Length: 117
Length: 107
Image (tube, rainbow over all chains, first blue to last red; front, top):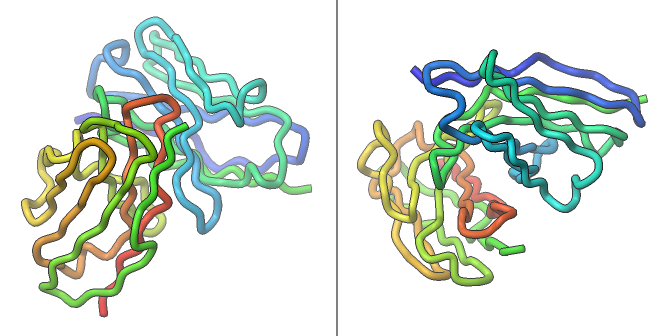
């Protein structure tokens, strides 16, 4: 069965970086892309960007351009999302999800990232 | 960016009621519209893709319709386990924006 398992809770200080992982299993990793979506406390879903599982091409939401990097490691079927220069308003739950091919059909459990001094 | 406007933002209904949520896109997205259900503390779950196709394993009381800019999501007979927040998402143009969500409660 398809599973996406994300890394655990992260607490960071403003100005630092965080890297969240998303390990896929139950399917051929390179056949599907991965999207990243975040959800601030009590808020809706915000699209951050996506990465192709095959060639690693990326597309990022404009508001994260220059601060986010999405990568994959096909050898371990793992996707990564690194966000830099963290601010308090980056406090959110970060989700990865599989793109199939025009919907997000499987999601990770979410990773809580808290940014606080 | 394509703006997705969902209405209502919240909704209270009784068990057995027919519930309808609408989603309007700021430009034509053909049928590239998905609906997700999110329960508190959980990841979203895909219910409907390509505007009207039911995801495998999703109960048939959920349905979707529409094309172009106007879309509708319907629960034919509300069940207690349907209490959640529902989101639409367009998959026509990057960035793949979401609606603001509709919180569904039991009356």
